[in-house]
Length: 55
Image (cartoon, rainbow, N blue to C red):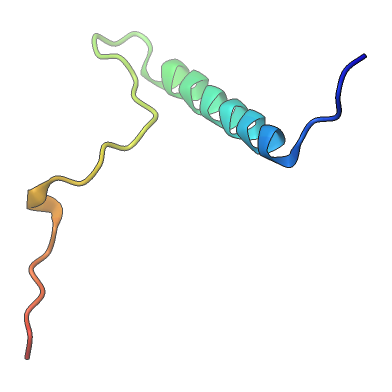
């Protein structure tokens, strides 16, 4: 017998389906290409941070 799915598992499964669809769409949009598709956004680098000035 299978157990009912928890909300956390449902959220993980939904996120995986969303990422799979995004990857599939990216592959279709870039085919043929020499570079692979990356569906995740890299973390910001030090150069991406803005300097906050105190006025």
